[in-house]
Image (cartoon, one colour):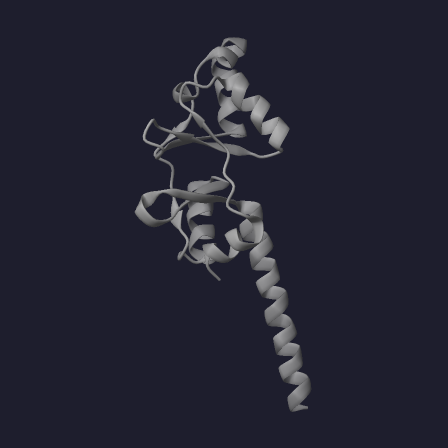
Length: 145
């Protein structure tokens, strides 16, 4: 299965901020939207970074309450790993596991952001594939007996 199939099911909406947003702004967005990361876009609209719940925790651990008023640029992950719609779910899962991160921006034509997938999306897809394969095998075995 490909990344495009995940996006067809979950949608292509992506929450993004600029690098000048504060850590407090991001914490509020993450809480309100019930998501784990937001994309950071530059003035040209391209992905410049990603900031996750983990990044917020690291910022507060390193700088205390002062971090809440600091900008996203100071704490985001610059140049995050990305994928394209034609990448396989298995390939993205491997990248996420190796890199130890849970969110991957999806780029479409012209390197423009067209979605984001999480490890939860990937796991849900893999479970559905496994269940489908098991059912197909059961049907095959039943038909040959």
